[in-house]
Length: 228
Image 1 (cartoon, one colour):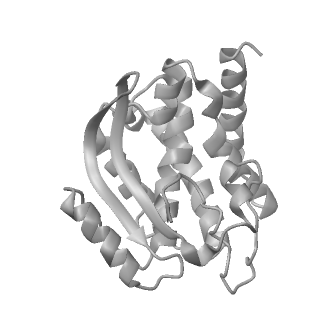
Image 2 (tube, rainbow, N blue to C red; image 1 turned 90 degrees about the vertical axis):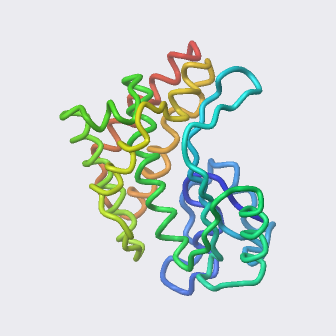
């Protein structure tokens, strides 16, 4: 089975052999129900790097990106990884295999936690957020908090925060998935990225004031949008 969800997958702290063995981040996510009912060894991790938007119901417009990183959760190189990568490459995609899939997951999280909720609050695209001096400062502060969480569990990010922000700027006038959901009238996911990392910070005794503030705002935005 290939896991492609955003955020920290349910198997992340299974069979780690360290102090975080069995650590549970957020029991509210749907994937948490798989814990105890699915063998972590049966899963292959992947990270999708596509920029897309819903142009109309049932129609997805591809904007940029064609990479799907693959990796074994234990950092090994299994034959199954190569076979899946070959199938994806034959379909015209880039499918690199990495032995450091766990740090790469956190690189994706950096962008999700910072850009998604801020875009929902401001209606701004990636490049607009990056080029606004005040908003880009907030983005950096949120990313610093997320980076602290990663380091607390022993993960060193393979890219700097500045590199992560520069990568988002290159994508250009793209609306995040959270903003697209909000504009489409389905705001239920607003704040979910901040919520999960906020709870993680609490469990690790790490202060996350910027993440908490944005989470509070996006949570209220979601409730107001649904008429609660």
